Length: 459
Image (tube, rainbow, N blue to C red; front, side):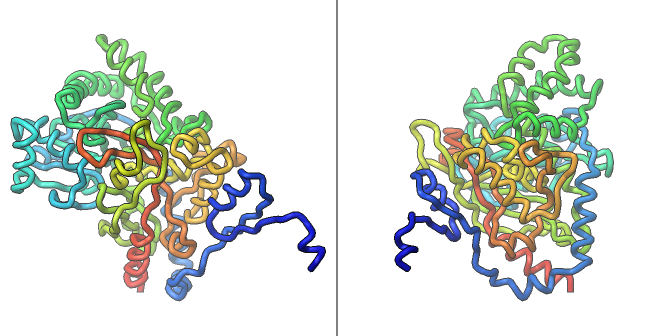
């Protein structure tokens, strides 16, 4: 015992990795043990270790890898989703939500959209219309679409069209509005509405003509972006550049494209909306596989977090959404932040974003997740809850292993590892905009509910 106590002090840290990082940063010798208490769902999980579930999940992974997503055009939302023209319908991010439970940014974006569509003359009248039930609300996911942050989609907005040519389905998403004060973060003033009108009237027709001439295969572009430092959620610099380079000749040939090219080139997140539509197009064919425990949708509306599971069809499993942890722009703090929001978690569900953090270590610093080793740790941790890896999308820093793909609800509940999501942080009040960026976690309660239903469903 004397010799043991006489030696240098070394620490064994069990559980929370943050304690080990702090000790190491201060020069202490530390060994971290990633231990978690056994799941209270142990008996249920043991009954779900079945070959038919593993086979179904393998089929889900096959469909994901076999997907051939192509950005093929840009069209008016009402032409793509007839219900938008048939009534005053506003689509939003996340699972279903009534006006009374909407957060500040979502309410602000809704009111801006109502004015944009001409259903009310000003924001006050728009709010009154929404409160008295003058518009209907529904999730983007119910109509084959997705949207970032507030995710507002209405009849006259232009939507990007991504076709999954391997399975014959398509998915839709609005065009990225750029940085600063934007509707996706709850902006709704004259500047925001004027930009939306320009996207509708000028940029969308130019993009559509270019894509009609040269549809853009997205899976190879994503593969290149991963090798260039993108993870496709908070960092889209490389893929935006590749997209602009591919479309520039056709845009220039169309004439009057200077503003369009400047706008796209100055917006590092322009590709985000394309990637989101791609993720939706890839995961929709995974829906409805018997005995499959893979997540097919993951999203949040600022109030609730929701997931869908392949074998359980279109049913939502929800829990209160959590606050992101991250870094704030000067002048803002966590007290200003809204809980996590947006359909963009479709990217993590398809194996990008935080699941591919090792490809984009610069993102780890931007969202306050640490350094290079932390970025590697995020991707390795997400592999523990995934059905497999995507060999088309490889990560150089992990010896070109594929991105972890296909979130398995069994593995989430068994390990207690909640899916990580790279995210922007919106101000809790409408009209302020983005105040930071960080990492959010999906609430485990969604997966626990889904697992219990999955077990009953598979009897």
